[in-house]
Image (cartoon, rainbow, N blue to C red; front, side, top):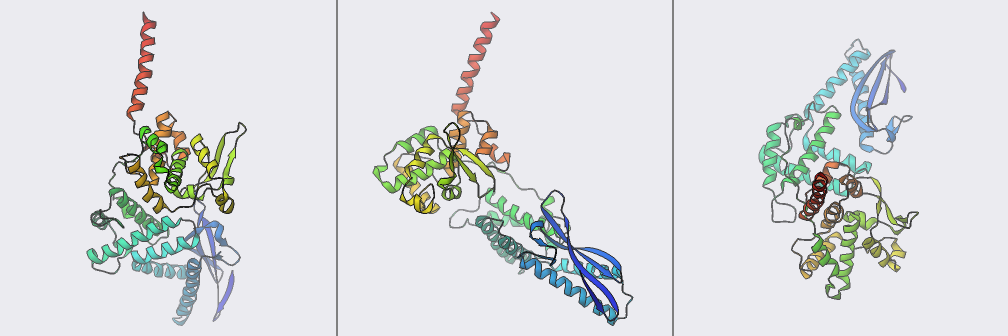
Length: 417
């Protein structure tokens, strides 16, 4: 804490943290001592506790937050000087009141696009979010920029002016927008993701004290059942058994796809997986130790025999150089070749790499009576509701259930005779 004197007045300023209950985050507070009288006020800034340096009263590397703290110190010094020029009776309570008043004025001036830009920059700097998540936030900001220009007639809009009607109009606007790189309009699930991103911006603003209430508290997202495309057991058999005209490139793409069919891995997790992560248990069964990119969850996934076969197939010079389990091929190229593979194998279901993950959940696991709780852990879902989307009961499952029940009822009837 630095003690300052200004024309006979003694005052000091210190920034410190107050933890947010139940999280690893904390709010930055400002402690003022004016002629031995103390007052504290919230700066409106919130960070992870681990990046705070108490000695310097600054974050470790977050330039945006550090600049804001410098500005707050400067505001204090200017305010003290102004009060002395006015020959005011200066005390901690007065200084706090005036600083909070300045803060309230600033809140009214905070604009949505400017706040979104600052939020995205902060998250890019702290490195906690994936590139895909950051892209999603930026994509939303592009939509918001066009919407505000067309429907509000301004370059930006104040956070305090965002209400139910704004969100409803935005929803209608998004329904008419083209999906990036496609001729189709945005689907409901994509639009809901944009709403979730905007809600994240606004929630952060509420936490920082910039916004009183999140308008999403009165705006409910329209739910549409998520449809998960997957290969049936017959389609999977066709894909695996076809010779693909002995085309080595197509066979490599198929191996990448089939690897995820039997591991459930997302494309990026499959590409990032290294051979050293594959281990054997005490009974000689293979499994892979995985840290999933999207959820950040660590999980050990059993390797079924088709996955083991693929793992062994690529124990080659390429692996010795890069250490990766699979050949390095871009997601776009994989999906492009999968279309050709689907046509060759006579499969009507449109195939992309993500279909492999859905096939793992539905055809490989649930259709073989693996409990949904296990499937959830296998797929690395952070929310069990996500797994329940795959809970569609298939016809083969119904037939198996009927067989079991007929057998039980038959035995029960005999027992009653």
